[in-house]
Structure formats: structure tokens, C-alpha cells
Length: 426
Image 1: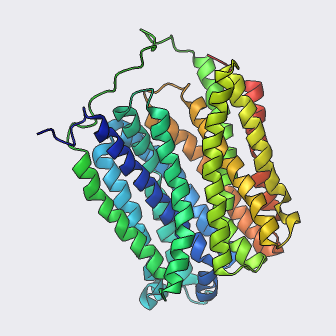
Image 2 (image 1 turned 60 degrees about the horizontal axis):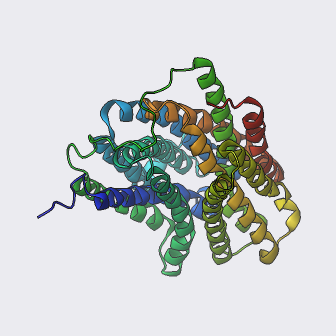
Image 3 (image 1 turned 30 degrees about the horizontal axis):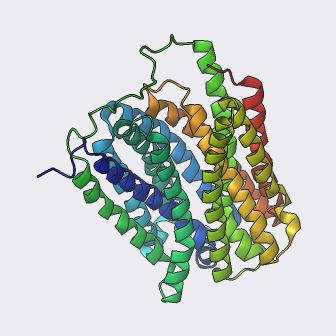
């Protein structure tokens, strides 16, 4: 009888990709849990916009550190044992978040004379910082796994499964929170229940990925060159700078909307929890569609004779235009029928820029994929953390989200400029 976990079976490879999709989904559900419950926590724990921005800042800085740390470890030890470690780490951080309701924890972390909710805020900050550290390990583990089990021809679809897991998690979370509230569950149920499901992912991983399963290299593509080209240090440096600019501005745009959209809809526009949940879900559904359409657009242009790089730049420019609509969001007004379609176009634009970034990143040396991708992610999350903290302070002071949406909409244009002016073709 054939072993279904035999690495030589093509079906096994796609089962593993399914496990990667599930891990990405859980990664985003744990990440979105706070933004979807932030309004409730604001009243319960005095979690004002300034404190919320600091929590997002702590998460981002920890993600930056974890990206380099786990990228190096993934290159050194491989993902088979490291992947469960990072998933257990972020799942336990999600479960531990619920201890903010414990009066002894709050007292232990609150100093004499501190403002109301300070102890709870410090616990949330600690848990979200640990969450960010371990969540960073997901991406190098997932990308290295996909590289090891898939051929060059299969990797684009495998990577699209990873990305769709992120959107699926972002779509499911607001609806999950809404259902939990309708059933009478409190905010803490969202955190610990998602964390428990994350722990259940670990035995699935070990059932699919046995010792030695990831050691077999995939067969190279038929048109692969017989020998690698000589290393061009200057060309590598230029491409790396462009990628750093692109991934940083994409991170700033995507993470601002991810963190602040539910609060913006509920607290600024007065949407109900149900209205906000559906608006956020539609935003991420549109983002997933925009991601897929961007990939098809590049392929269609190339099939019609356009140079591949020219096709990438053209699609990147159009999707930057969609993302720029974020700067107009504050002018749209409160109407669900008017505001949500604009947000959907923004989501389609900003997520659709990501697969083009991934395609460009394939021009970098693959030998140290974990470390290189980790360094790029680290640069991104340091910037994101700084921006989130500053925006949180600005919103607290002014009550206005206009600056945040302007930055989110216009930042990718810097990536387009770098791509046009600095990218050196191989």
C-alpha cells in the first residue's frame, strides 16, 4: 500500500500546501482578533487610540526581530521542527491575552498612581509583542517548505495558496467575532478559541511532514539553465534596495488598514458591529480578488508579447492607482453604499501589489531565502511599527484618520518610483 505521506506523491505536496494555507489563516485570525475587539476593550480597559497604537508598534517591532531571527533559524535547521515551535508560540500568546481579565495580573503590572487600565494595557502589550515575535517565523518556514516540495512550475500556485490564507483569515475573523457576540460570548473567547485551534495544527503538521520529507529537492524546470550565472554584487544591491522600498511601503499601507479599519468604521462613522464586520469582510474579499487578478493581468500581457518586466511595472502602476483611492476615503462620507466600494477598490489595489513584489524577489539569490526575506520583513516592520505608533498618537490628539489614509494610499507610489528608476534587469 502506498504511503499517503510519501514525498514523491504529488497529492502529498498539495496536502502540505493546504496545511500552509491553514497556518496562514490562523496567523491572520490571531492578528486580527485585537482590531476586531478593540472598541470593546477601549471601554473595558481604557484602551485609547494612543495605547492601541503603542500595542501595534510593539507587535511590529517584535515582528521585525522575529523575521531575522526565525529566517536565520529556518535556513540553519529547516522548517520541520521550527514551524511547530513558532505556531505554538503565537497560539499560546493569543490564549494568554485573556488573562488581562485577571485582577491579580492587572494589579501586578500597574504602578502606584497609574491611570485606569494601565495594568491591563501592559499585559496586552506584552502578549501582542510575543505574538508578533513568533508570527514572524511563519513566513520563512512556509516559503522554504513550498520551495522544497514544489517544482518551479508549481510554486506560483503554491504561493498563491499562502496569500489566500491571509485574506481568508481576515475575512473570517470579523464574522467569527460577530457570531461569538450573538451567541453571548465575551471578547476573551475570540482569543483563546483561535489559539486552541492553532495548537491543534501541530499534530496535523507532524502527520504530514515526517523526518526527511523536506530533504528531497524538487526537479528543476525543463528550461532551467545548466549553470548559475556569476554573482553580480552591484546588481544584487540595487534589486535589494528596490525590494526593500517596495515591501516597506506595501507594509505601511496594508497594516494601517488592517489595524485601524474596524475602529474607524465603528468609532468614527458609528457603524454597528454587524455593519463593520460585513464591511471588513467585503474589503478582504475584494483584496483577495485583486491579488488574483493582478497575477492574471501580468500573465495576459506577457502572453500577448509584452516584456515580462514591462508587464509587471504596468500592472504595478495600475494597482498603485487603486491603492491611492485610500487618500479619498475621508471625503466619501458615512454611507455604507458609498464608503465600502471605495474601500474594496483600495483592498484590491494594495494586496494585488504583493504578488508582483514576490515575483521580483525571485530575482534575488535563493540560497539564503529565509535570512534575505527576514531582513526585508524586518525593515518593513520597523517602519510599520514607527508609523503605527505615530498614527495612534495623531488620532488620539486630533480624532482624525485622514493622515493615516493618505499615507496608506500614497506610500506605494514610492515603490513604483524605485522600481522604474532603480531596478536593474538581469
